[in-house]
Length: 281
Image (cartoon, rainbow, N blue to C red):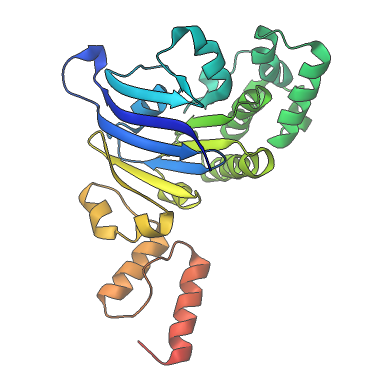
């Protein structure tokens, strides 16, 4: 499968001077994939996200989105149609007093004909489960609902890739679950490539690939089972692992022969059941 995002030896420091925030990032993201970028505050993950949408430009190195160089000013509009971005605070993206008008905002600015715009807005709101709220004021919505409206506004633009910069950081557990369900549905239904910036282990565990950043570098990059099995490495850089992975880790330390690649409660229960059935410890 071909790459939609290609990052080559990316270095960045604010103002082009001082301490580097990104220190030689190399990364390929395949079309149709869901990739989580995980890291503690200050690791560089949000700075990386902003390079993909050309909000920031490299001090050195290159970033390409579907073959477009993010430094090519003449293709900036085309680039942002291919790669939409959802930010941490949905209030910063909501610009209208009616939900459906907010979702239509980007389409109006790009001159999409009314009939097509009406169809895209309705499809996007249905995709995120917010169609019944289309005539409501965003001020009446919960944080999770507002974030889903913000995502609908990006879906309506029909980008090939969506970058979500900690979209659940300001939400309660229910809102986080709603947004994660929406993200996975977008990927499966429309084939949209998802780059999810997060510091929540359980969210990263739901993605197909996890890249871990520390000090402006990618230090781990693999499927979730392999990344989270490296418990000691993650702890050294100040990150936790999913609770059930931590439990399996502690059981192994205590001499229980449970496997390392456990991410869910169901997997843990199955592994323990197999151990009990075999009579092994």
